[in-house]
Length: 293
Image 1 (cartoon, one colour):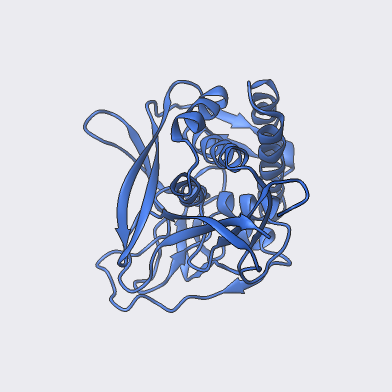
Image 2 (cartoon, rainbow, N blue to C red):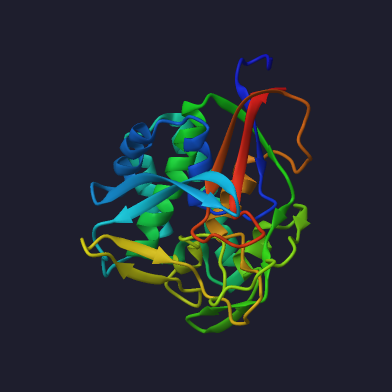
């Protein structure tokens, strides 16, 4: 048992990482979705709804957490505005601090990768709400589960090129490459069967978050008008595409103290979180193993 009585979380990100995938894993491990919803709405407002769905990914059972947005929004938000949202929100201090750390890493990576001053990084409204929801939801989930330390495996970043507002970008995209400095990288084998469409890791690939010169996802509305953000599209058929998103990498680097194999622990809970697509031969999931070191 840790001296502080808390749990250690080891993240298996060998298939990639995104904010919604991590949230699915933490909810699957036991985090209360209703309490996550409360924290998310404290920063993102009543127009954001979290919902869970049991799914299968390449033969593995997993939990998919959807972040549904009720309004498309036409405005933008800067990093100082988002920082104030986190400061003013009714959040547990631990959740707020973890979320601030993740956002600072995310904005810093975009700043370095695209030559933009941090305070000048601008997020489109839909992307801002989606990022706030993922980051705050994940950080609150860790608190609710009693996690006091985190480590993780090497991360799969993907391969190929993806479509962006300014043309095609190589994978990993600049922000992910910046965030991956000093972390172990892995490269999963290509899928055993090639799908008809390029395959992304997650249904919310946060490359669509920032307004200028950054990757775009596809935003569509269902029959009830709920917005969902689709994956950034790969340029070449058969490419792995973007497996690690900027938001997922920012969470990984801010939360995990070290890159390591599964450490010796007494295992208490396992959670499996799904990405948006079921890729043949490659389970599109993030796993979290919780226990005492």
